[in-house]
Amino acid sequence: MKVIEIFYRNKHWYGVAIPKNDERSVLIKNHILSKWSNTYKQWLFPKNEQVKTFLKSIARQSKKKITFLILKGNRLRITCHPTQKGIEYIKSLSYYHYNTTYKHWTIPYTETNVDKLESLLKDYFLIDYVDKRKTKPKESVKSNILEEHHRKCPSSAIDKLKALRYSNSTIKTYSNFLSIFFTYHYAYQPQEITNEMIKSYLRYLIQEREISESYQNQMINAIKFYYEKVLGGKQHTYFIDRPKKSKPLPIVLSQKETISLLKTVSNLKHKTTLTVIYSCGLRVSELINLKLSSIDLEQKKIHIVAGKGKKDRYVIIAERTMKLIVIYCKKYVPEEYLVEGQKGGKYTASSIRKFLTKYCLAARITKKVTPHTLRHSFATHLLEKGISLRYIQYILGHQSSKTTEIYTHITHTGIENIKNPLDDFDFN
Image 1: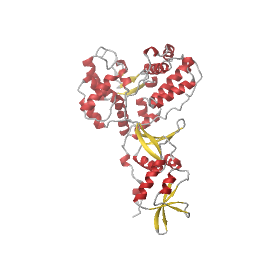
Image 2: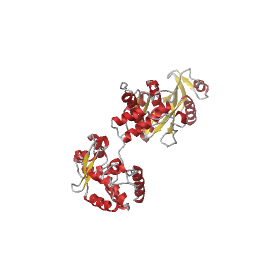
Image 3: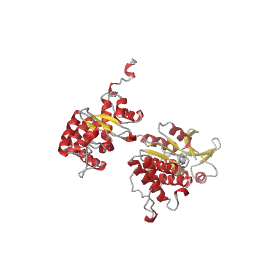
Image 4: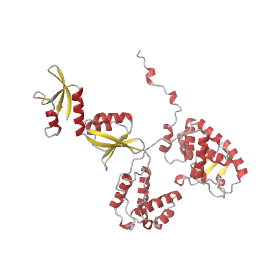
């Protein structure tokens, strides 16, 4: 059904074109104000509010009801064929994506995009929106599985991980994911699980459990490791498209916020911990594993041993940080690690996150701050001081310069000095 405005015989009309087999054609034909026009080959109605209301009411009867999903990361999933004009608009956007497996589009969820799509689709669909960003308790994989069906990660996988010298965190992650995977397939031996079963399982995780991109990639990596490295099978590109990783900018503190945070910390151990993380650009795991023997106060540097990717590097210690370390060591007298627990041994990352959150509240910092935020902030502040990206890459221990380049998208230093070319035009 298509409605247009027509000026005919010095009057304004609504012209309605509708197929004969459309059940609404009977309503149009029997309407007291309708007239058939042989000239236009369609039904004519006088243009007034009464007719407009009638035409709107029957137009809704033919529209298909569809649901668009608002996803985490402010993405809008379009689950229908959005007409040719709709597709042209979608493809004009910078960050659209078409999922060839599930036949749907995703675009940035913005007011402009929603308004434009509704204007293009209003004649064909009644659109409803479901906001999937709202958090809801997710069903555990084990919730519907009896305890007797629970399967541990095969010891052969753990032995292989250790033999290849994977990090403890990777061993723990892979073990957990393989346990979940084999528990789901508790009725089968690992060798009996087919490629199609793995593919079906991954789809279940994506569609039913709505797992994150990171979770999906880690599960695929764990499965690939077991079947390729442990069982010696052929390499597979695992059957289902891996997600494109979103690239959100990291949260950073301004220099003023960093100073305010560190001033708020009253506990000497806590202050030393946060100061070393920030001033040396350390990962929290590197701080926890930092031994006293790796700190050279004379050379003013710290030797980071086997950081991420098992890479060593040196970082320079600030004068203030050195003085704080000396005061801290005199009071707490650590034995092996710079920061140790109450009973000795390594400190825990959860303890650092806990007291960092407490001090952020005290400093009235509303951003979501983690220990890694201090590392991001340190890198951004270096860039703002004019330090080369190449040096920042080395200090942080990044393997690729592309990882370091993300900080250029955060800092605004120098942007205020850019002159707009329009200011050079003389057109008055």
